[in-house]
Image 1 (cartoon, rainbow, N blue to C red):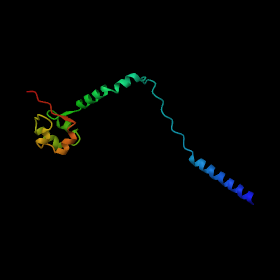
Image 2: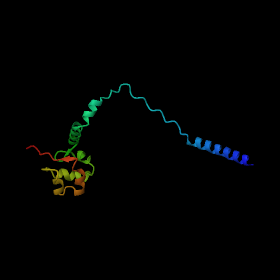
Image 3: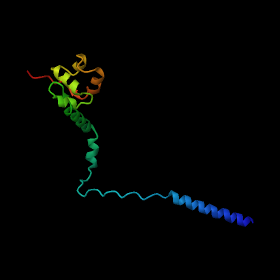
Image 4: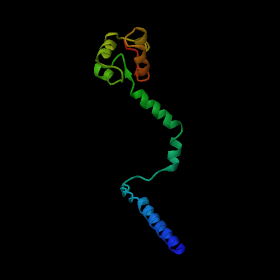
Length: 129
């Protein structure tokens, strides 16, 4: 009887372990697209150099290029700034010219909380006489 019990336990253990083995299998990952044949080779030396000051200068230049001049921008350009809608764009245009961008807040053209949102996105260039 002992042999039969041991054999039964071994058989049940084998059945359970194979069931767990089948449950653990996963589907094969989807194949990825091959890289384009015309892609240029990476220049690792050039990439390492560009991580330095050049990247920072490029980022600052790109940020300046995107600044909206509150003295010359159209209503449509002003409305592209997050937080500036139709009414605030009209108020900004009506209050021109501005000596600096902080006058939007000091003249109560826009609320202080909106100014804090937009101050890095705008500029007030001096108008030519």
